[in-house]
Image (cartoon, rainbow, N blue to C red):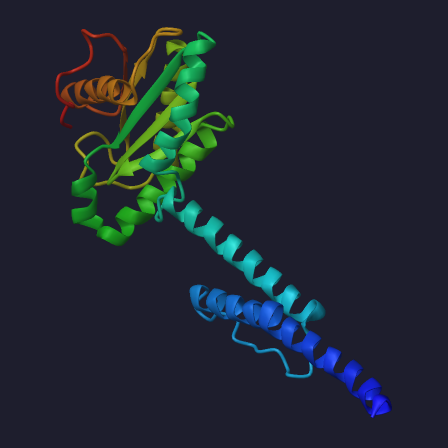
Length: 259
């Protein structure tokens, strides 16, 4: 009898250990992986062969699933801050970066400039050439913006429609106007045909520039409103030009200027 017990006891220990491992570790891991598969949309539906053990297989699969979800999450975050047509940033990206950049610029007593860029007679362009051509035009303008504003600190976004915004950190009025004129001239040189424009026979832009005084506390809305007022003046005086304004209480419109 004692001999039989000596034979049974090791087997019982093995069974108990297996049961504990299954219920405390392996089963929860399988459940976690199944849950991750559900969140992941089942993009990788392979299943582990029954012969595989927990050591390495489940843990490795769990790590792969977590890596995949992290990558998918990063992609979603990137999509949330980018304009899907042009690949430029959007308003959310602008606000995220300026929440950090504006206070630092004030602390370091650096000027901040903003350019509001609007395509001249874009509605007429769409009416004549079609919306597909309009989208291609906006993509080409985005490429010109990338070629012009290359510093890592330059923030280039599409506000919506045919309107773009560039924020230049540590750039005074002379530098901001120089870059605005360079961008305007570069686009005109590209020569995108626009027979419906009353300005010229190619696509052009009007640019309102707003410049803050070094270290002066201003809000993003104040900067955009001032640049918008400059843009409105561009349109009133013939378009295809750059007009700059300092961000002061006197220059900030009570309501956003309409273009």
